[in-house]
Image (cartoon, rainbow over all chains, first blue to last red; front, top):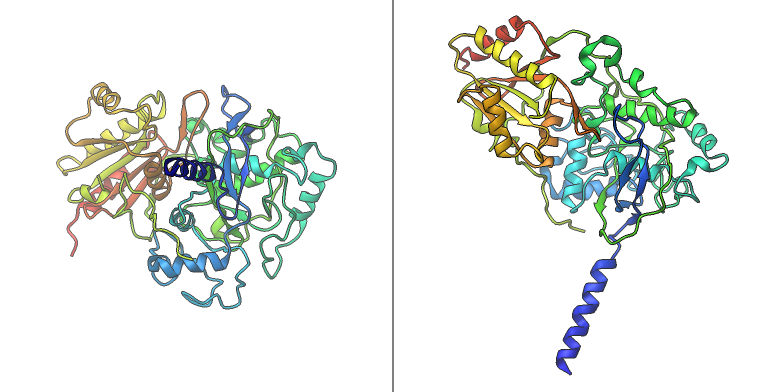
Length: 318
Length: 143
């Protein structure tokens, strides 16, 4: 009998671990997704495996806990290499939110900072594909494009100026997956934002026209939906990892157990939009059309960066 | 290996991948041209792969032979995470496409002997004069 009890306990633990939903996250089941930007020979759709995505963007309160535990990420300590001068400028001090509300999404955070936060709680940033796949859902369907009026609602948000006061998270209805504010609140960092190749790439250098994102991005982008995805792509392409922007935050993701079954294949196309970046940091002129030497940034160089460096993985303190 | 381990000599650094048939050989060619023009300045060349999965140590060894890269060339691979971080630091954009190619920025970064970023060359086939000047500046002793 004691042995039976032990076995029962182990089984229960195992089952619970497999099905446990990470705190504040929802499961986004796998499926297929049609990225805006495709290679000439690549498939039109890519598979997205199931993953967990946080219901909301990371809030000021959550980020405050992070900087409390990680002094190197406080405003006065952060290295310029990892965040520009605007880092957390909406806070009153290192550990003082000032007029920023705890339930507002944290903004003015760099990619390095966002990634460090995600690693601190044992998570990661979503990939571009994951983000776009989750964001293509309406309130009732995984593929919102097929829904009457959905595009119009998103367009309405895009047309509104940035509010004076940042709304709190959960300001917009949850989508099909139970995720809030994918559209309508802030832009969000993705882990692989560097894959948005607006700048010259190895093949686009062949001539001036093909260097530009617009020329390639417009292929197949014949409606408003694709235009919206184009805007997001363009926004990411204008970013650099140390930039901080007044309406750019992030949310976290996590791999899901592989046993989750995928959704039926859909022809979901990414769409929706956000306000254009309002910081001069977020846009930059197109690159020159000929090779050149450019000055190194003033910020400190990657002195301590390693080719095997990984983010901090300190357990989260609550 | 840390980038700090490369301190002591100026470093020309680029992110490439071995199966790249177009831009990467040109980047290497440009790095060689720069090195030739600075003459006897001790210099280290570092190539970091954007494709650690396919660029195994063996694959990189063949790549080294094919391009006749000497002992002052260091070829590195790392985790996807580490490569993403380095790319973010250097401003290198890259995207793996379904056809196996990787689109990427053509960027050569010069680190001075102290490990600080001194300059970058963007594009392919650049005249190395500016790079040489930057490199010579980077080798001047500093207090």
